[in-house]
Length: 167
Image 1 (tube, helix red, strand yellow):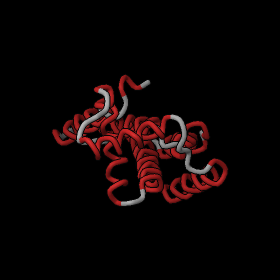
Image 2: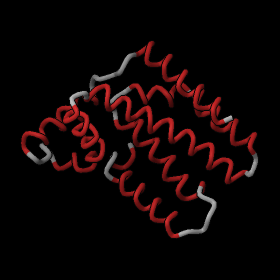
Image 3: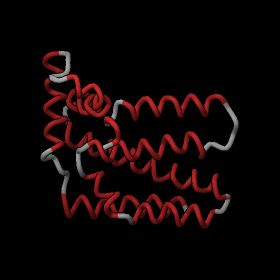
């Protein structure tokens, strides 16, 4: 079942990529420009960018590697795939029913408005996937362990600096 979900997710993403390409306009230009600004000046051009810093540092990493656009897209694709699998695991842990977990993940995958964000180099894709990962840390990990809360705290901190107020 997981293999089918992974293949379906990749197929949906391939179709969206072929239809729309990697979207690098409007908001995407802002994050790329701010990443380049940070590389030049070692600071943000405005204080508000601190609250986008995680996403800007992702851009910086791929600028340094020499393939910003493709790198950020590939990163978002991997995070989307991870979030989808963790969504499945969370549903399985919460409902204790493999069919419900499968249908839940299947519905997430075929929700094209959700999947579309992966092709856009905006903060939405990363932020929404991090919400799922954070939720998994709280409800998807079945063991009562302090490590569970450490993962949740870490993912929450990433969320805080990925997109201000989530809007």
